[in-house]
Length: 257
Image (cartoon, rainbow, N blue to C red):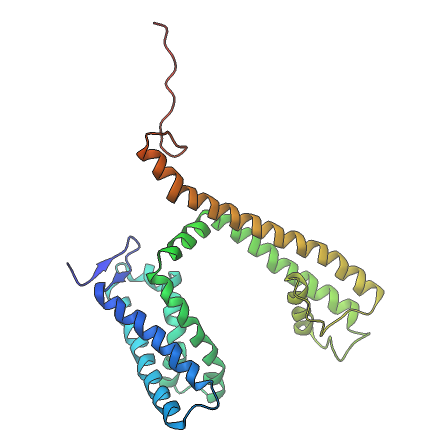
């Protein structure tokens, strides 16, 4: 069995050594969790910190190795897993370029994304990928509509509420946070419209937000339903000799005998 194999997209697979990557990802998260516990013994915290650093260097080495072994490299680098691998390495790569400590501190959050590296070893992740591939055009259109609605909502609520609440709606970015809360139907309540125009505008946006959530749910559900049928029902029908929509077979016209 060759040590390095490649997927259809050209990404490198290191065979049994991939198990080492899985274990290190899990160990890295366990140790990182220990650092977040205030009552842990100081020695345990120091050991966990050092081991975390070494695992972080391993992630950088793993990313470089995958780039070198991928064919074509461009496809891996710009793939979802390639971008994720790079983002996880970003805090550690920044140290070598002398990044400011505030920048490094803010980049610590991306370390949490390392857990998604396990998706590379999960067959379920392939189903997720196929599902989003099926609705990629619709998803792009939907995402564009979301960005447009965020802009319109932010600008509208800023115009409506800035003069009445200058301390809360100080800038467009404060209004953008309100737009994110409203369109996601979360509504933390830290920003509330008090003017008549602001309330009417927000009410209309709320109805649109509910529709957006319903459409996105329908798109994703439909895609996963199609993937599930292709992976489970259609193969079973082929084994049983039942014609399926994707079998490429068509009924032959009857001929008079």
